[in-house]
Length: 386
Image (cartoon, rainbow, N blue to C red; front, top):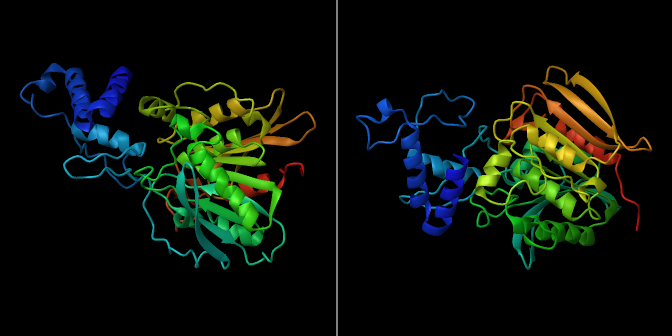
């Protein structure tokens, strides 16, 4: 089936969605039992939704003809079919969010944009009430698919936390023209390279905020969810001199894919990317749910394997956040006893930001509180002043 997906991806590029869909329909029909094909040769067999919403019942709805659009939508590749546009299936209900974020924190939520040779992206910048021109840390937050800065800020509660622990929070926004589902393009080779594609835009945007606000250059951090988590890994790998630490929530390792089939395989946890010397130079904190059906939890292990310094000592702790999910926390220290990496495997949790607010999408309020834990970890990491 994997070979068929590669062939379908090739047909998609050369001949369009119709040809790719027909190829997969043909394969599915060939895989059906003879009895199932008989008497219904012209109609594709109904397929169960592979990612039902939490309240949905397994009603065996949907047709094979919707399989390719669904796969494409999961990677943000949109193409018209019968006048319709494909949308990313929602894992969690979407919640109403006040666009200006004013109900979430009392600071200023500024809108702006950044342009370079690779394109233009909008952003939102949260400035806490405690900011009066003094030097503050900067946290860059990369949203997941279908999200935007307001939604992500609401769900993670980072603006409210920036009031408690004064810092600037930058939320780059993926353009729908760059990806139909507003996913960061972590699976494109050009978007995995320093000085190219989306990494150059995010880094340039970060550097612009450093210039326009009094940012402490030794305390700049980047984090993201899902596709944003995968892009945060790329940013830490490509710009280790810029970011002091990386937070990855339900993400994927560096260069885990370079096309549609390999992206789907990576999301299912296939393969283990090679260790990366540049990523080893930057501290990381990783969160993943062991019931994640969108991005396999094995990806959290792959990120750790890819980024762990040699001979790092590990301490394993088990706990539970109040009435929230139980978790296993693995803490890695370097030879000097400094914590350089943490991995949180949250038991019974899926593809959602842990400890998040229901004001945002893709959140799980049960905890542990990923936002607070990331900020705690970031506060222990800084770069030497140049």
